[in-house]
Image (cartoon, rainbow, N blue to C red; front, side, top):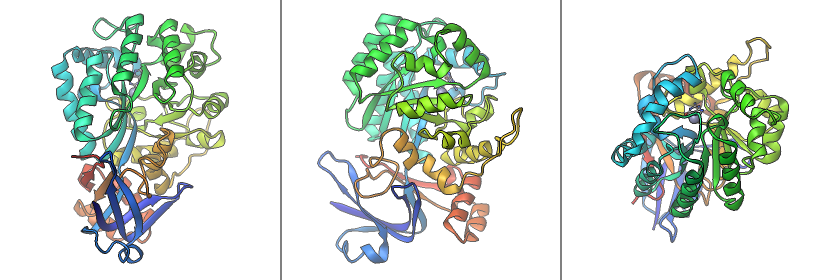
Length: 432
Ligand code: GUN
Ligand code: ZN
């Protein structure tokens, strides 16, 4: 059965340009698999005659926009948010690893997975690429919860067979057996996808990285996720452990872990040859600005990612990141773009447009995940994951957005002032 929503509508064309209908109509229909897809999107005046028989939910004063895509988040770090440390490595040692050790208990994993998926929905996030812990049961817990909710979710078991404490360290051979079993169990089931997940080069042996690369070659439709070039101490450590690789990033290439559907978080401290390696291997970056600010890691170079262009999109990186809210992440990305003008090697700061920031967290992020035309947009054929936003959710937002004369002004006000209070409803295309 077809179903329609009438409100202002935001979507993106094939070039990433924002398309706005101030009085729009979104028409959807369930496919054979039970997934609701967009049939038509455009101005109400144009589409209404053609879909006159379709029941319409009218939402005056609201903006319908694609569900947000979070390209990198750690569900087991829900309770790590806001744990301050001098930098990444002490933060991992003092807070993150001890918290992640608790996921050996499936009941704990299930409780956190349910809360986590609830937070994604409350904040308008409808697709996420997610780290689990090294315990296979942590993957089962998250996929089980996501499947119940009909969420499009990609996740994987952390691979970390060295430089990790008891309780989170895995064993090389078993970790690869577990990964393959989880791929077979979950990848492609409903809206779920598997990601081969070496935590980062310093916590994997050469053998584990090589095994992960072999699985990545054997299962090309499966994703790969890891971290790279986040923090200067981390980089020095990785370089010392893998002296034969040209750069930290090149360690992953040398182990068969850079290809389409590979996603690396942070990608801050890059040279142009690293950018070219990202581009040439069709590898994507997950940009995590609140995490980078919180842990003092540095600033992603947005201008560099245009100069030597490689795919990138936005991510919360909870719990190094401080918020599930895509509004907070887009705001931090804007600040990070501005801040690139300072430092030892001064670079001109850039001013990311609000349409661009929004694209980087929806259709652009979907493209970086190789899910273009599937999620992150509201064009015909896309899965109908969307948010209903209330631009007047707070007194100040109501006052400020009422004065917006252009789409850019409206989106900028939402980015600067918005949070979960703006998200009135999150509609998941496969929700039962
Ligand atoms: N590098 C390796 N593990 C992690 C993690 O959990 N968070 C972040 N931000 N960086 C990492
Ligand atoms: Zn991370």
